[in-house]
Image (cartoon, rainbow, N blue to C red; front, top):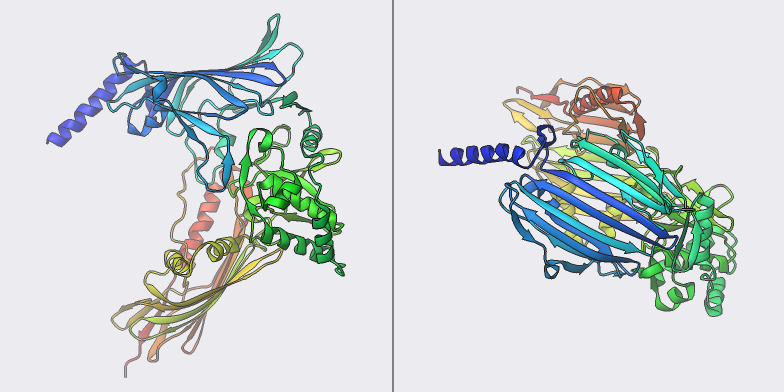
Length: 630
């Protein structure tokens, strides 16, 4: 009873606190915190200098909203923090405390051993343990890195509402602001003073954005304003960003003269490929030399976030970041007569799509493009074990900006389809009459499907690999008797996996009957819910094909009682087939599932869920045997 009374008291206090702090009941629904007011002002002083001023007031209603009581302000050699202020108040508006400068932590933004950064973070915290409470933060930063103008994302946290937020940009007369608006009810307001052109955006009463299964990226759904310069300057390097071509010319300035190799290294490389006519073989030789003689270290000091170290530096030191290693590889290929192109890209398996209609600095990684007669070969220059020409999930199927002598040019990297990303399995399973079994399993993984196993091979010890198998094999009770992995490199690399498994109580025995679920290791166990009327488009971001052939040898003395129907259905999302054949004591199960990438209208979501439910049901089908009476 005491516990229930305590809960009731908390609920009453929470409900009562809303009006005290001026909370709109609609904003409270589903929200852990409400941003009462946020003002962001970006003032451009010149092509080489700007100031950002932010003031934010947030009411926090429970412990899940405490992140709003912490402020993180990044800074480095080109971005300075002018000041940080903060104050907290209780639910009645009474001041709890003011932030002291001595309480602001200043820590490195680097957490990895292979990073050399000047990036740091100032952290201010005003967390309170009695709810609700309110925090006010105000801070200002000054930047001399005008490659980047700020983005405005007023609602950037889940389960957070926004009562009121504004964003203002002040441009000196004669300087141009470029901007791109997304999901805004009201467009920009513009006016001028005697010295500045003013741009202003406001929003109010934003409630939490509720995502949906297979929804687009949140960056597509949230209200947002992206801004970018026209003319800009970073540490003496002047540029223009009105077009991708112009932006590429600025990158060319940064790279100019940095691809010179020592003559001794050129001679070594030329001797290494002497007698080789095939350009692909030459590329492989140079790529293997890169992987054997260098390692990746992220070095971003000042302009070093965009300008590579000289090729001679990497050659002598044996390390570099993505820019330096790519520039070095470009120089080495040039030394053996292979032209290549430095390329900017967004790296990561959950990549952000480039806004092709808004030229700006949208990239976080650099790779090398090697044009061939038939197609383009892409090189990831930071990896010591990746296959030459394989982009995979890290840089495949997205836009990259080629930095050509004429400037920037947007192109697409290699796409990997369901025909490329294949998991093909052949297994033989011998059952005894107690329901236990021994399985010999061979699986071939290609394309993106091979990546998990590739990483396991290179990063885990044999004992860790064994533990990984136990975590990832989808069989209820088993022991790994033996295993092996074989990695085959190439533009479409593959891993071949061999397993010997001991299966405990693999089939269900009930009286005289034995129930066998023939899908050994690849069953769908869950499907997304049909949410009814859908708001957003349906996005499937992965494509793959699974082919399973499982051959069972049944114990003597059992006769077939029931065999499930064969299944075959095809939709816009993929195709599925499964078939069971019986030949004496041998049961052969063949299952093929192909899932495709795609973007679909919201109303087709129900059909996709239905398709997935059909796959789920087919995967649970059982073959029933009954013990013969002697």
